Amino acid sequence: MSDSRLLDFHVFVDGDPASCTQIWLQSLALTVSFAWSLLGTYPCLGAESSPVASTPEVVLITNGGFEEPGSAAPPLGWAMWGADKYKIPEHFVRDTSVAHSGQASLRIYHPKDTAGYIVTDPKFALRPKPGTAMEIRFFARSDRPCQARFGVIGYQSIAPFVDAESPLNTTVSVGVQWREFSFQITEGLDFFADSARYLLLAFHASADPALECTLWIDDVTVKEFAVPDEYRIINPKTIKVPPLNHGLTPGEQLELIIDPSRSGGRPCREACGVSFHRLAGFTSQPYNGEGKYQLVPELEQAIRELLLPVSRVYGVGHE
Image (cartoon, rainbow, N blue to C red; front, side):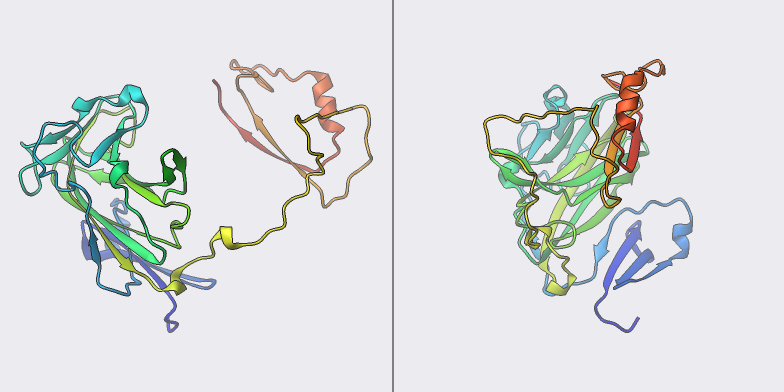
């Protein structure tokens, strides 16, 4: 691999650089080399990319070590997230009986069949800069072996909340012993700073809502450093595309007239339609919840008379 313009990602097992996967990306060439230790059942726990242009700068996560005294639940710098019915303060508490370092950690209790989780307080959201990367590290353990979930949620704004691309969402294998986890997100590769302007770290005690689990986290840190522009991809917002002409006339309401008895003839083969169908849904079309076919002949014929080369995507679901 002689070209210096490479992306080099490392995935470590138990934090051991000798046991890792390295993936090099170069134009259309892709070379993947697997270390022997990944041939077992170990999951990929973290990722770290190589382009570093300056010494990492510590970005302060408010109360990432949970050393701020107090009985507030959740503790300073953190916020409950998800549906209101799962925002139970007693499930997100500072625990002085368990700590990786210092005097306390954060205990997250996930009861069976719930979906509550915790994030860094939006008031202290990370504010990414163009051309930078963030290295996120934390220690975690649980009351039993299970799969927890960690993510980085992106927002365009937080007052009001407007969603943006979220650069990270992954499971982590945790057990009764403390383990360190490390992840890197890179602006210009995983997200763009002009859209994901606010970033929140998110921790779920259990990746499976149906499983009960208690998770402790401690020593949460973030380091920011610059990366060369050559490691960026094209921001879709910078691509100028002519607006699509829908052939609509401005007005106060949308009016459509559909006459299935008339056909304009067979269409140009360059035109096509995409039809999304659910095998079952609240309309009970084309199948109801018991699996009975419900589509009436008139509707079947109307679909045939569209005369479009249609690509159909089917999904199973039921409300």
